[in-house]
Image (tube, rainbow, N blue to C red; front, side, top):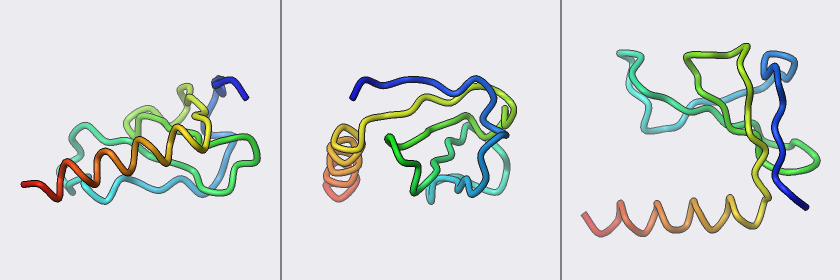
Length: 73
């Protein structure tokens, strides 16, 4: 599967913010679980903007890499 985008992310329900997002509203990303063709990712400050849909295997590799990097701190 190739990655693709969704022009208006507000059409989808169930977004969740990164657990590293702070309450002050800085740079945040949101992801959507259970999307059939991958993992949609969007900028939380622009909910009507586009999202990119990332291949599930690529997303899992990204999460593993980030988890490994943060556990080394």
